[in-house]
Length: 209
Ligand code: FE2
Image 1 (tube, rainbow, N blue to C red):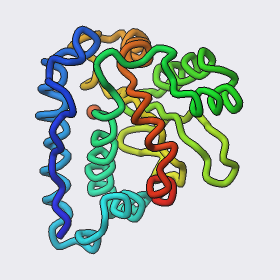
Image 2: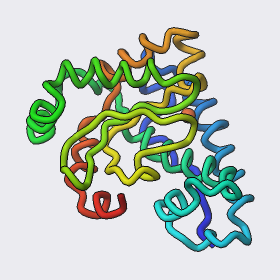
Image 3: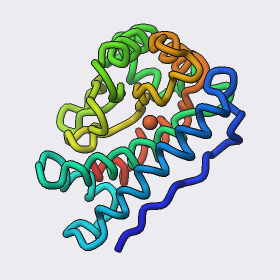
């Protein structure tokens, strides 16, 4: 079967401080993400999805009542695999690679409007979930969306470019209940736009949607 494994963080645990502390990453990566991996492997063993790619596991388990627990864990594994790469030390701000900046300006009304709308999606997600920057494969347009719990754009047929985890486990140690401040720090200081561009330009990533 396809074994889910916890990827190492692409930076030291304290590399994102003070915007995301080592303690947050220790728990979020080492405990929460690990739990999705462990539970996902338990649920996959002997299931009809056990030999699929992770992308296909997410897509084929979505919306099926009997596979909901499996979906929750494999989707959260997919989400967090990307989430660690969507951040880097000294990231964020307006340092958006040219091709992407142009596209954001064309489709979303400019970089500042994008940031405001992305943050609003994260703040407006009631309870646990994610805020996303996606591309619609049919229209080619960029869009902002939000999803509850482990749901992601892949399950909804969209091309995922950027996501921010707005579960409390992502910010409560550093920001307590101040989710807007966490989203602001994510956008201004953490986003790894090089990875967003890599996804935007990847045919394989596009075709998986
Ligand atoms: Fe998380």
